[in-house]
Length: 87
Image (cartoon, rainbow, N blue to C red; front, side, top):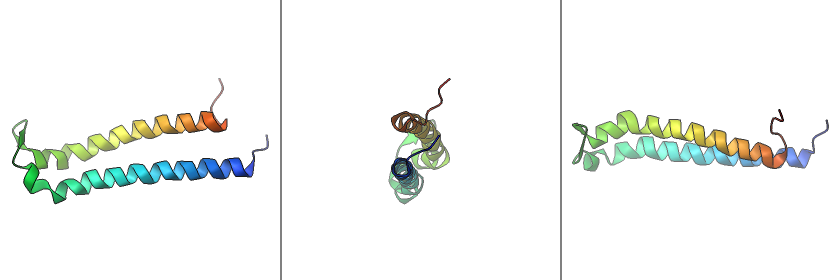
């Protein structure tokens, strides 16, 4: 089965765009929390300062959410370009 080169390039470009956007969001959540931790620590969450909680749990939860989001985005992209699994 021959695949059009332009189609593959567009697919790859869109995939890289998704990856960059998701990594920027994760970077901002994980390191952005550190920058504003002092302000976040004014609030308590489950008995812990909120800045500590976000640093310890928040970025991991965001990353797990992004894994599922990326999976959904790639499923849609595969269907759009005809690369989905046809069972």
